[in-house]
Image 1 (cartoon, each protein chain N blue to C red):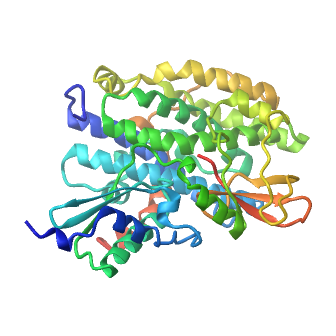
Image 2 (cartoon, rainbow over the protein chains, first blue to last red):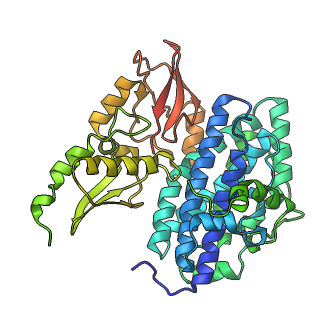
Image 3 (cartoon, each protein chain N blue to C red):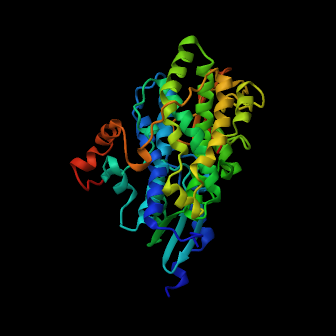
Length: 257
Length: 175
């Protein structure tokens, strides 16, 4: 038995796309650093992070296609959907900015991602549990790395501190979208497949308080919150990202090798 | 039902698989890595169950091809490779033999109990110098080493440097 409660496959597949699209889009964004990072070791680290996230995205989107039951593969979902069909949060589609901004985004996302995956240990669907358990090991590693670097750079030179604080000020307004509950989240929670995102927030808040105290950084007040990605309302940045990510399948439909 | 004579026994199949090298770290085999989880016959098809080390590891598809090819070379005509995610692969599954081979090859083997847990308090303790673990240089065995990067040349490795013999080396990540 794979599912404890009957759930509408369309809703389930859409939720899986939210999780998978976060991984695929952030993975693609980070891969843009390949060959451009400030030092070789970080270049390699970013490429490896991208690889893990794209691998996870492939598993989530593969399951989304299976649940949806229309014969779409992970590749079909990644390469043949247009902007409005993507369900990732806005945070992960933002341009990389400088290295500090890329790292801060990674930390803000990793600290949420690890809580989500941990909570999916209890998911009432074995396929979701299996992917989450696999991804959790990789994300624990990402999370420890981004924590290290946020502390080192936040508590580093005046220049590194200023850049990390600037990145935090810029990105923080995009974080509340990770914890907003909507109707789909409620459906998933009722089916006991996924937690309500708002329940992940206290642990995330504790992590941030702990790490920012070590890093000497201050999270800004959330006066204005940016959201929409979870429902397909994206920033202009996603289209440019997809133009590059999907180019080959758009220019040469069905190309294989 | 096809005759059992045409279906080599599991023990023999495991011996064949023990000779299939990992494409990126050829001194260890796919069974040394612990990624082959099961072999079983389903009628006249041999089903080999393999678990990935990392979700995005590009070697996964090559490993599957290598396994299928090796088995065909041994006369097994029908082979199916199945992916199994659960339980997720852990570096704990590397055999003692594999660890010795890695060390001799110049890759420091994983140190049990040091896997990332995502427990930030532990991490910060480690950053401030407490609860540090020693990764020995595979070249000169010195414990005077430092981490250069948490990641390395393949998804399963991190980069270290020996402060005595001054050589950089890979550490097989513990997950």
